[in-house]
Length: 166
Image (cartoon, rainbow, N blue to C red; front, top):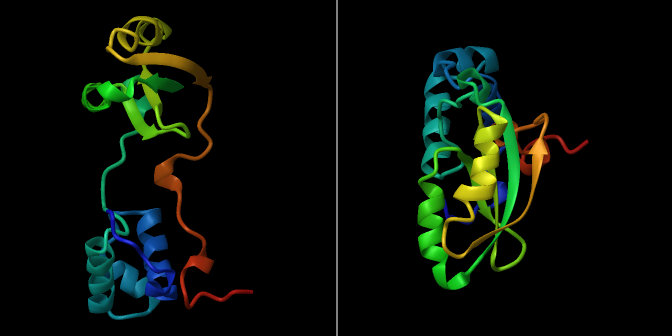
């Protein structure tokens, strides 16, 4: 994305369209237009604009539990800065990692990984990650239940310039 966005670039219509797509990304532009009582062409142009601006993307979100990945763990790593590029490349190739980000410290990484069994998780934490040169597992926590996932987040109406600011 890398583009700086100004909140004033978005209005209440953007918010309403985003909400409709957030509920169901498969909804047709014609249905959104009917629901919002506006022209279909307007909806299509707005969606194209939002995508072109990098505001969002239409994608199919996988439910890990449907494939047996019922165990989630948040892991915090300390990495050797001189190996950072190699470490990131290796971590990005690990299919169990569902989220990877820099942590608060300059040599910290935060990740979420998914597993089918506790044995797989144990092997990953105790053997696979420490086997990567320059990686140290600082701590981890089992995630018994995710209450809100990133694919469920949406900015509040106040971030859209024309929304009522009651």
